[in-house]
Image (cartoon, rainbow, N blue to C red):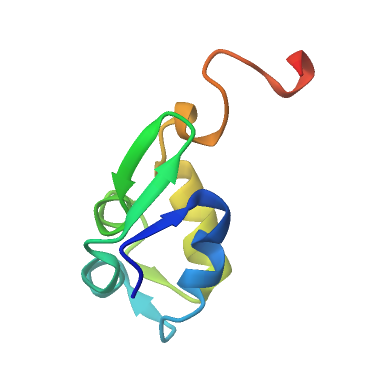
Length: 85
């Protein structure tokens, strides 16, 4: 598995897991992978471990839950909405 990955490549990396997968197993599999975000970096395994769902049916399910677990600053330029561009 890669040591670091951009936020845009996370979804394709999640597709490499076998589903359904528990939050614990997914977090263990992704531990040590650094996600490069707009406002810093984070460990992907730790982010998955912070998700609320106990089990994920597929990569899309995990990806959506992961987006809810990420800090808002991770997804774009801090303090700027889509309409400010």
